[in-house]
Length: 280
Image 1 (cartoon, rainbow, N blue to C red):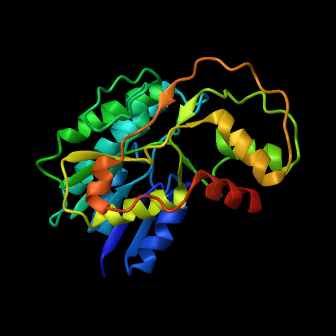
Image 2 (image 1 turned 90 degrees about the vertical axis):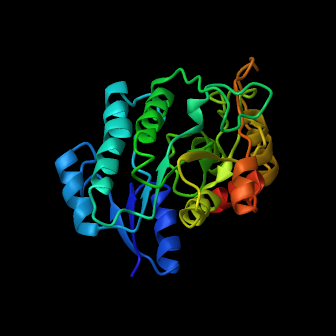
Image 3 (image 1 turned 180 degrees about the vertical axis):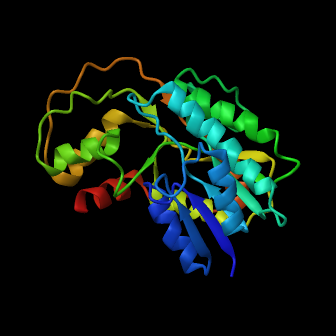
């Protein structure tokens, strides 16, 4: 049986990836923090050797959240990834594909033009910097392992933690609340549905491309204030307490390379995703 190792398997995305792989007949070995600390190189080597995976999807990492500490971001996102790659390179039969999950935040802001994979990496926050460092470190393993780095832009769905923006906003509408003062209406983000993102990761495992990066995105920028309007239309409920609109940072990606690889954009609109989250 074909074995797949999924790190971060109990996280938001991992819970969608695992059943997809199992449905395709993979023997899935999920790895979470309680199973193995990705920062412990010896433990990672032993775990990877015991599984001996044919495919690796590395979802584990710290989230882009204000309470996350820079040191933890580096040790998990960078050193943890290096530990995993070293363990994979030691295998007698090396994996057929290793997918590493980076982030759109390596770009910083993207301005009026969507970022493609050749755009400058101008991350300013600790999270974006840690992912940029992870990519740089991973490039040193390109000759030894078939690595594909994915840069997902923002995505959400049922099960996303309510400390994050969209689930927090959906909760306001589900509870018929009124305060949306945390919304920065002119900030623009490129949102996708976690169900599509998970399927895209699985589909990319079978692709021949390696030693490169690919954006996971829709290419459509949505002002956060529009999400409020969509939710008002879906629920018939109106909120108050919106802050004054200020100049917002745009973070939108180009999906051209991804569409060349897979040929199919997401079937989910943002309205579909929000309706699904409201009903959950």
